[in-house]
Image (cartoon, rainbow, N blue to C red; front, side, top):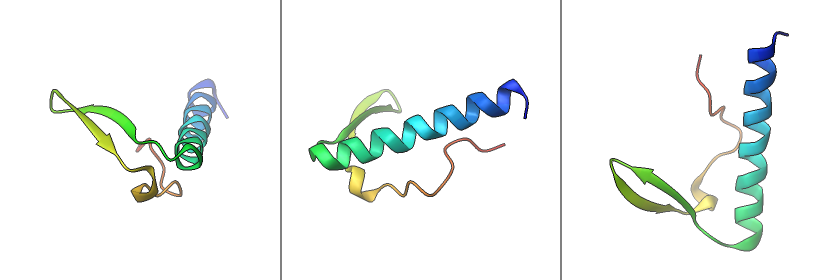
Length: 54
């Protein structure tokens, strides 16, 4: 496993932890999409999917 694989794995773990935390706190995830600020319901996000696509 090289450094880039370790970085990707760490980012995916952080993403899953963020989603779990947002579900626990019942707060939306705030992102920028097409130059606009958007709220996403964390319950509509499937954490089983990988964030990073090779």
